[in-house]
Image (tube, rainbow, N blue to C red; front, side, top):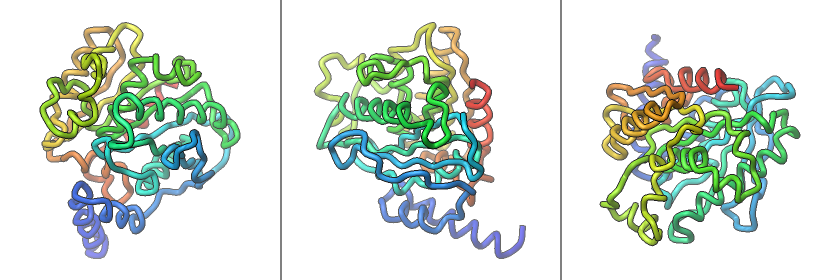
Length: 288
């Protein structure tokens, strides 16, 4: 590695270290990080009347019909985040052949469980309706999420009631990938989970692990062993439940990778830290 490349990598690593602390470092990272070859097919497409009910679409650099479609939900403790700060994820997935949707959804305190899940299901509905316009196959959709977004993606995949209520056939979801997601977090022992889920009539119905069964889709799980925000035990418990149910699951645990590092490893400058993008997209493509 040349000295220039080492300096650039160190600089992006310094920005990455700040990502979990505030929005502005993530915005800076999204602005300055080298980008994968991809096209921005559309921006700000509304899937509902609220300003946060909107999504962006990224397409592979070489257009072709019938591409698989990935819908990405970002994290942020269900109370922060914006799709513009994750265009590098859209570009990374598009560079691997997916027509990629990056969706906003309403956040606390505007909404609580399960409203943000209904938003995510509505985003999938719009994706199904318009995927072909951007070269995507609406019958070959995968869901991807990080942290709170991984929770959202996993809930849609494991509890088909949200998609059905939105008018989406759950069978179009071929696989789901969760990066450092909370899947089994009862009792609610922190302010974030209490404020978001505390009003649910039955707390067991807020947990992705509760919905694991024989009909579960293919699942890819990835987490960093150094994650102290969402402990790796969440992925380990879900992995065990899925295997017991006979579902297809691949789980990867990366030494030395923390909570933000697992999603930042999808980015071009930090991809060498863990093979998350390679392993995840290989798994997702194999299920199409």
